[in-house]
Length: 172
Image 1 (cartoon, rainbow, N blue to C red):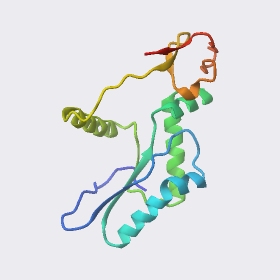
Image 2 (cartoon, rainbow, N blue to C red; image 1 turned 90 degrees about the vertical axis):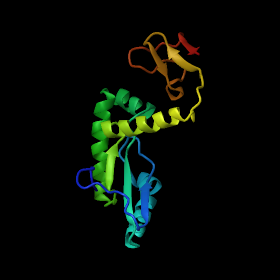
Image 3 (spheres, helix red, strand yellow; image 1 turned 120 degrees about the vertical axis):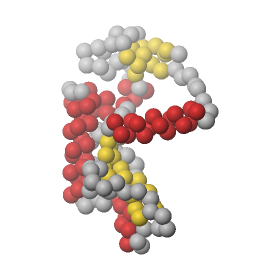
């Protein structure tokens, strides 16, 4: 499994070029057999099959390091989201290497390269008017000055030391 260093794989004229990816695992747990079967194994089998057929295959995956799952785990473990991402990316990488998953590249959604790619895609969508703007309401805790994902809310603010259950309100 590559971390992305070395010769870049590019499409080859005259050959069948196949891009394979799988669902990006969140960095909020240690992957278990169910995660591997449900997330990366079928894509790995397909990538291996395509390689055996002589196709030029690029199999990429990586940890999803953004979102509520990461923030929740950081709060639970009393550290920063970056520390959670660093810790669990290394664990995921080690587990997939142990299972000999044949990624050509196993990366992270937080890398500068990934950010550049996402921003480029966003800019192209924006330039072509393929995006629409929408407004939504989201719960906000006045006490700790933060918006709360719906999974955070069970009647009071989950931020340690806050516990505010009277000031949650919908912000629009």
